[in-house]
Length: 68
Image (cartoon, rainbow, N blue to C red; front, side, top):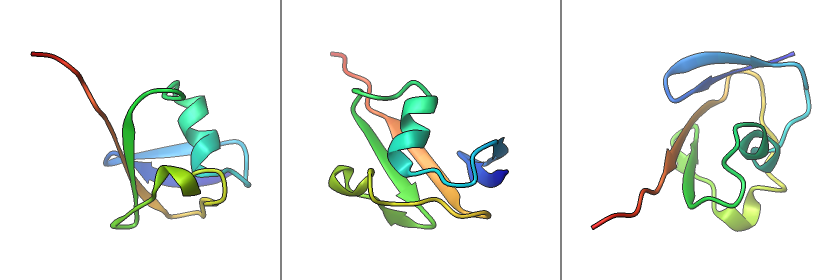
């Protein structure tokens, strides 16, 4: 069980080994323009697949919304 804080809310995931990319996919954000911050540092999209989450991580995920 993996427990993290996501956008200010405590969340639990059954997987103990989860990458940022896996989390993004589970949340339904795959293919969308997003920004991910992990423990106060931006995680570049090129590192989503290789960045593993750990218990207690604090993540902020922001979805870019287009408009005019």
